[in-house]
Amino acid sequence: MNILWDFDGTLFDTYKVFTDVMHEVLGEDIHKDDIFKELKISFSHATTFFELTNKQILEFKEKEKTVSPELKQPFPYVEDVLKKAKLNVIMTHKPRVEVQTILDFYNWNHYFVEIVAGDDGFKRKPDSASYEYLHNKYDLDIAIGDRVLDIIPAKKIGLHTCLFQNEAKGADFYLHTYKDFFDKVRI
Image (cartoon, rainbow, N blue to C red; front, top):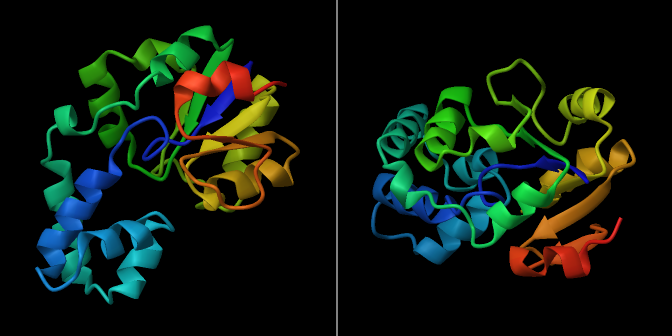
């Protein structure tokens, strides 16, 4: 199986870190659950929802970069899926250097034949250009993400879709844990 992966919230459990950092930036008045909920839609959505200034957005990005990769752990059992896949690619909005830092820390570079990162010049999801590029090059079977934003471009180009830890309508498959991947995802 040839798999396109989202990065944050799909391969790595990073939203706890994002939530904590945004909570620091916003202050104590906003509950972390509310921050998490808005971040899971998208970072740009959360910045608009909470009315962050450009200065606060920069502060968030700088603080988040300083958090150790050790606190951005891979989800349990995801490595089992990576090992069994024929090939894996990543499409993320995260800057390449940040992706590489985390992959280097966990020694996971060898699992991915290509990474399309946020600073590679493609339009942001839900635009499908980056997915089309990867699909044309690698004949992908499925796209896995944690947000509807991750599956919209996959649906547009005819890929199977899987939402991870998200029950929103529209995906072909749903997983709460990667332990169930090979039982639930059949292509």
